[in-house]
Length: 30
Image (tube, rainbow, N blue to C red):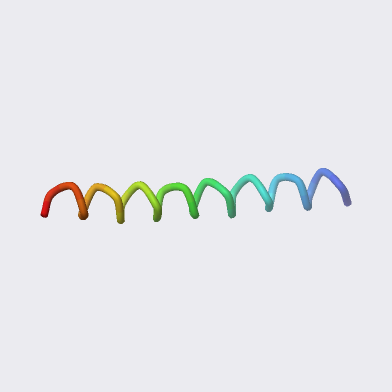
């Protein structure tokens, strides 16, 4: 159970990081 929650947390964190990097890249392009 804990491992499953941990892996889901990592996936959610990586997706959030990708979204933040994408937003910052778009801001830098402007």
